[in-house]
Image 1 (tube, rainbow, N blue to C red):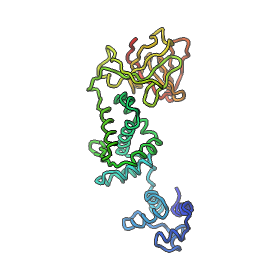
Image 2 (image 1 turned 45 degrees about the horizontal axis):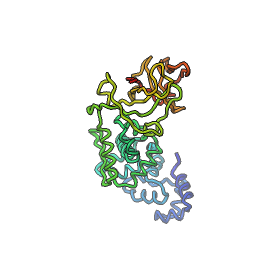
Image 3 (image 1 turned 90 degrees about the vertical axis):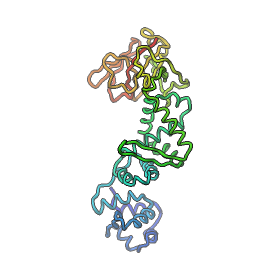
Image 4 (image 1 turned 90 degrees about the horizontal axis):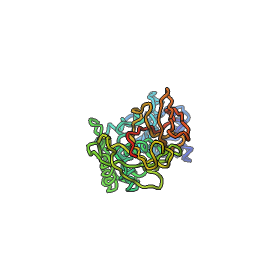
Length: 347
């Protein structure tokens, strides 16, 4: 970690300033600035309430955030460990600006953590709004609550998406947010018709829970034993649209809210189920998969999805092809980005 004098010298150089310029901006003598920059004098204790205006002046003079300056001063003077770097720096700045003024203490809690639980919740909510506003209408209608949450969870884990796309979008729009610690829920308030529309659409998708007992399941792609298939960002086979099919007989109605379907393409599995057969998959069912189950999986390298039977050997998985023309695959758990159980087959 840089000490304060070195940090200040670097910032002056980056801003094409000199010691005299900084002294004038701070209203102090050039000799005082020289002593601080050479390390002969300690920096002022800018964390004290009476030095609030000095902190603001140093922040403006060095073109650096008050938090960064405070971290260095507190460590240098009092050996207080610096606060962790926020996981999403751009989003953190936006959320601190838009936090409900009644929750003053929460801002300090957030700064003390890499990612505060309230911060995580509001990021999820903002990502959900962003997704429904930036996806084509037919793709949004195809999401079930589980797939929508999963897609948004993966988007919220991407720093580039959160810090650039999402924070950039909401940074241009007026909103505020509130966190209820007792219920661990966040509430977003906005005068923007765009944000309110996104909130409504996201809530509509997420309210489609088990109690709705849907009688249809979305087809999200095609699968084969050999070539595999690819999802688009919305979960559909490239170049094809969205389709709903009836819930298969014998499947518990409660599962209808979470199942998705893939259609068999080609004759690579004709000994078992031919072209057009439908496989009904339970998402997030990795822990339920056992030896002999038929599964759909994607590896991290190829990114394509296949259907095979699985056998566990220690930490390895043998994924057995049902067609002798295609080879078996041996993968480690860490190699997989998707492993989900086939719950039903309709020929």
